[in-house]
Length: 135
Image (cartoon, rainbow, N blue to C red; front, side):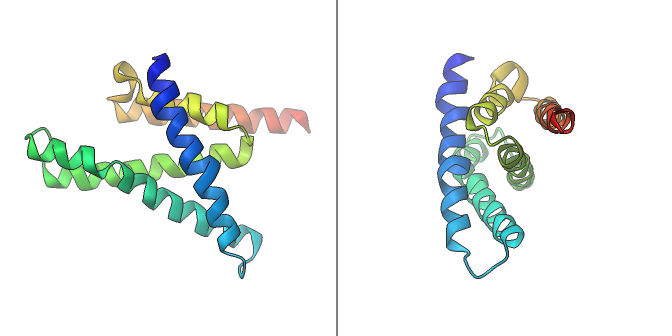
């Protein structure tokens, strides 16, 4: 689990949320702050989904996935990426997002998309609860 968290979950979060999200946000200068963040979040998660495409295509070629399942998995990745982005924006903690992503990717947990979504939603809920209690 540690190697999954360090090399996959945390690594992807540093790349996509830590670097690209901020870079894309700086790029959309003509828009309002909320619109800039939305544009950056959508764009970074398109790239996040496409980042996973080679392994999905390999799964199609090996017969593990069909093409429809591949497309559905890319949509699910996009939505999970939006969740990671929201968690990062609200928590401003790349380590937390990397941990949550790593837990979602962990083979015993991450193979079940519903469990991955539940882990993400619990993390978002905890951050939101913490923010409310802090006020």
